Length: 251
Ligand code: APR
Image (cartoon, rainbow, N blue to C red; front, side, top):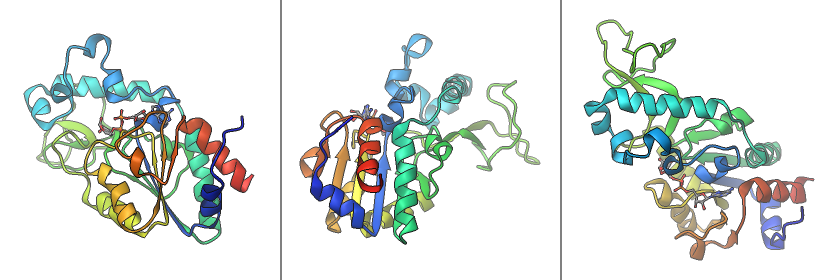
């Protein structure tokens, strides 16, 4: 494979002391994880996102929401990281080995960056494999899927368990969002990869990086609202472009 890559980008990345990367559903596409909308097929096609991924939906029909996430958890359990995830692990290793900072910010809830071996990572929208209590908020350990949804085992709680993901209308985890904002302002290069750059507040992160004079690099087969603002818009699949980029610099 020989993808033409801008020499100026190769030069900048081989010297950068701080790099931040924002990923979205497109990075997991080549692993076979359907995007939220693509996943709404078959049994689930009749529901709108508001029926499946909001606090109101869970309040009204906890069983339906639990089963939708149980279905997605099963689906994710069957897949693994792809060459795009692996290339980001390598990029982190090389940049940190020379004393640089590397921060991975993901909107994906599938945990594939962790599985691949990325270290400094913030999951802005949570993780579907983690379960918490909708009432007391404490992470649940050792739950079983016999009930849908199961109940919290904390003494005196008995609340319903839910996936530890950020639903539409909910706030992002404060610590992760703060770290993301700091990384966006501190980086010299900001990558926006496999995201439609539409869902806030994550969509503002590349703009914050631009405000702080970072180079903005987009990797996406389709144009997004961010494309005209990017210093380098690399049109293609992350599973092809990222390995090529890493290979060209660190061989
Ligand atoms: N490589 C890179 N990008 C790709 C690839 C690929 N192989 N395949 C698809 N894409 C791009 C698409 O062109 C699109 O721009 O990935 C993007 C996916 O966009 P969305 O489905 O909108 O996903 P994302 O941006 O992650 O959505 C943000 O919205 O659905 C909610 O909370 C959910 O975290 C999600 C958030």
